[in-house]
Length: 126
Image 1: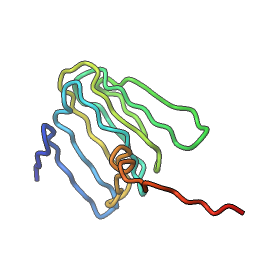
Image 2: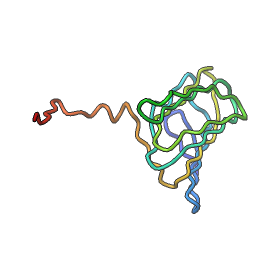
Image 3: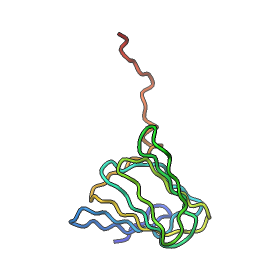
Image 4: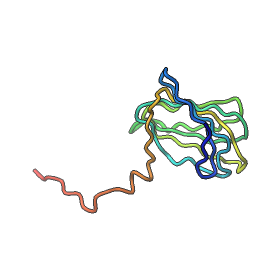
């Protein structure tokens, strides 16, 4: 099955061994996968074609921010629950495979989640 979302085409395959695989055929030129996390899975991203795909993640408060630039044949691991992103620096299409160790990894994009906030926060004062 192939599905096109915006300018990104990918194939998703869920196996009974609780693995979710996605092939991104053309990451938007000059595009960014906005920072997000998967609450129930670790992600492995393997670069197939293109060049200079910038990736980064941070796992918890106070942890070191990890970044790298991937080229074909290279990969990156994003631990479960880590905020991470991918940015296409070359403005040419890139192709990669992303595998997650859960058939239901979940995904929360940070920008969309931060849009919701109460207008006032009342904290009890003791």
